[in-house]
Image (cartoon, rainbow, N blue to C red; front, side, top):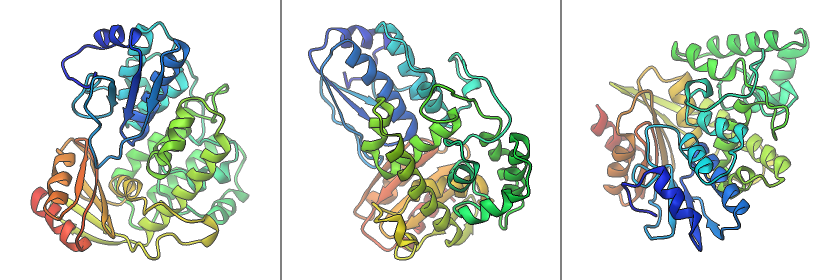
Length: 367
């Protein structure tokens, strides 16, 4: 199953008769959502399976029972979001893919749900795409944007105190707080649109498709096992939201406190891993959320097309346009005793060197 060159239809035939399947999604929101879609239909068909999320810096196992998801090579590799591809596979297996999960995966892949070839069964409404019904909670912890009050519930509460309690007013406030924040770039005015006029999911685990995607993407970095449990449909909403809050606070705080450097084509944020975790009440962290910091840096603070976040021996990069970032990060990490990889637009790495040495290696490759 790990071999390339097979169509989705061929893979469906193989899976239908498989005595055992191993599913290996890459640790990102789209791939994990896609894995959830596939695992649900395997369970419905009583096909035994095992699932494990694969770190973005490593490759999936290659054997006859593994279905890798979200990687450049494999039976499901495509220019489309993994969730859209796997939704087709689920239908070929006689299943009915959960529309909220499929659309959330596409949104996590930074492809608007209405730009995919999936049906969009959810109405768009005024307001902001958050996972909770509480706008203070949602705005403070959303990682779809980096606004002046992001990560600070008290600041969000104060901003909303004298505001009319309607979606249009809240959306306007978020847009103003995003584009008017210190250090905001022109790109942010476009990227904030991802969080506005969301697709409502009245029967889903979260309030909107966009909020669902936000939670999946954060959990993929923070607690990938929990992300997979969520995508499989287990009742982990409370735990998922708590992990999302912890991750979001750390990401916004880390970006806000980072030291930045600008080069031709590259914008670097250096985050101090000893101070990034911040509030002790947030609990212990797995690592600095460099993947989310890099994405927010690219979308809301970087004047250059490629953003790189570095903290300790970890780094992540995000590019506006496809730029072989996965290959670049892998080469830079390998030159410093580490490993890395990703897609053409988002990648991560670990390395055994000073952060400045890794940043220099990436800079030489892209400038």
